Amino acid sequence: MIGGFRAIVAAATLALGALITTPAAAGVLQCAPFARQVSGIELYGNANSWWSQAEGRYERGHEPRVGAVLAFSASRSMPVGHVAMVSKVVSEREVLLTHANWSYRGGIERNVRAIDVSPNNDWTDVRVWYGPIGDLGLRPNPTKGFIYAHKASEAPVQIAMADRATAGAEAARGAF
Image 1 (spheres, rainbow, N blue to C red):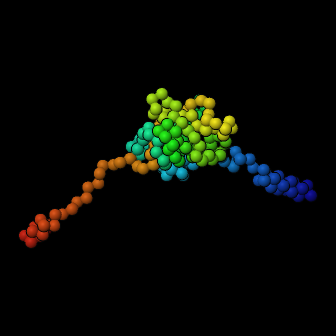
Image 2 (cartoon, rainbow, N blue to C red; image 1 turned 90 degrees about the vertical axis):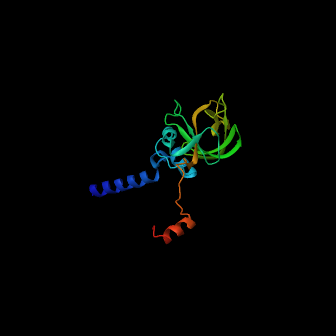
């Protein structure tokens, strides 16, 4: 009888535990997998490693382009960095970003404002829309630059073609 009671209590505890799973236990959407999904850039690991991983694999630069990923540097407030996809270029100093896990833990934000506040106009410091205050964040965030969605150009492919006039003459002489 006591064994049956314990089994019922254990089953009830397991059932209740499944019903009250917290978001943290269920997993939180992170910026890197989301940026990979929306941009098509096949890089993995923490966001602060994307810039170096992209070297030689993807073009990188300091000019915003739609579909590019803005790679944020690691900082005290962002120890693993951040990545966000450019969804629209508004001007040379303003873009709209689509990203995850910025204003709200695990949340997705689409088309939020980001402005270049770097002294050299090179997107190395940006201020980004922050939902809880309904405005751009109060402090600038350091970035490495943009990773462009197309692969880095490789050596041009050369296609061999025979000169038909020459090939025909050589074939007649038995050169082939």
